[in-house]
Length: 93
Image 1 (cartoon, rainbow, N blue to C red):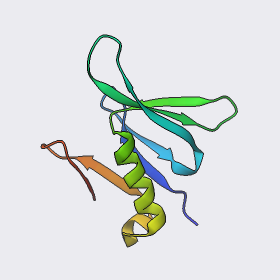
Image 2: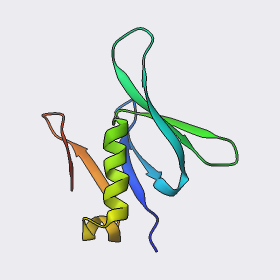
Image 3: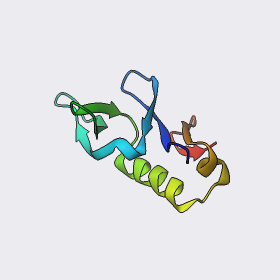
């Protein structure tokens, strides 16, 4: 069985890989000094690890659901990759 990784974008525009089996929780948050939002992801580990990502909770929900529902053979075999298009929408590649 392959490890179910998703690719997300951190707040510095870097692509990060997260094993969805290690996600404990995630929720939307807002910066104190602006209206910009991000998603806080808490991961299981020896010490609780966290990541802040640009994808919304709803997008992460969709990515995880797509992996487990097997809607894409490529997704089930390898991993699910979401790329941000110029319009700001997401698609599986």
